[in-house]
Length: 89
Image (cartoon, rainbow, N blue to C red):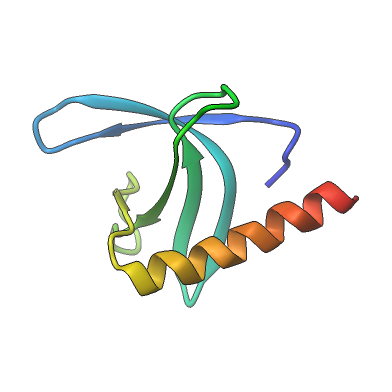
């Protein structure tokens, strides 16, 4: 993902409420797509890791927050490395 360009996504919960997120990084691990997103573009933004749980061929992606602690920490480590590598270039 190009770190100079911010992509905004809208996630709709089960009640129809929309939440706006800004994609910081994206990666695919073992066929699963993960996004590192923030809730704003401010320096004080909260960061979340979302994964795409939609079936192959679905028109729309279905993103859920990664809740499993081991999975979240593993993916967070990968995103940290990606961000560090991007800052070095």
